[in-house]
Image (cartoon, rainbow, N blue to C red; front, side):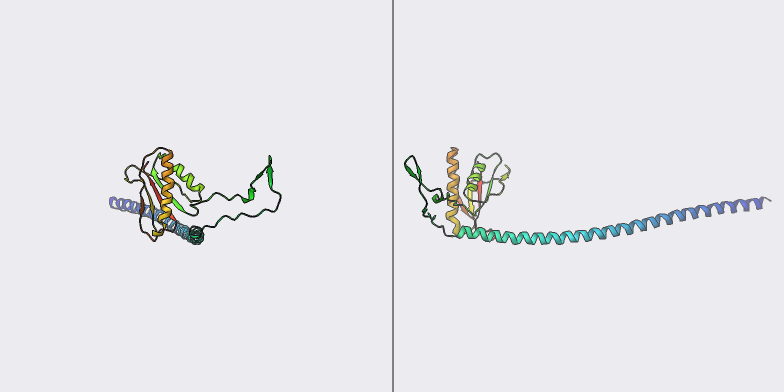
Length: 217
């Protein structure tokens, strides 16, 4: 009798363990299915994201090519301004009635030439120490005279440099000297004693008409 009871108890425990294993197997299978489905969904999302990224890269490439082409055209136009021989301002004869004020002839406004722009088309990068007394005034003066002046680059105190006007093409020495004269004029108006050398750094990769002004004041 005891042997039969032990057999039945063992059979019952075995049945319970088998049932438990079945439940665990079903749960593991369900988790595996969920994992597979999640992986498939993620792969589809990654594939779509890659397609969108590829489309964005293609659009960006087209935009970049357009910008590069525009830059080339602008640079060609800018260089043509720099290398163009200066023309004498033409004064047109005005057959109309002269301007008279208080019995005196006044010059015809249409015959008054525009102020000269000696730096027309030049690109001038200004580097300075933060809080410079000179940079903003120089930038305004250069802009007024036709130069293209990007944002002023402020250099930290850890980097050592001195005042200088730098040019990169041998035939632009005179233009660099003219830039130096403009800087000297501003330094003089602010009563700042400073020596500004003009330095030639040969570099064919730098566009024609590009200069650098370094101000340690």
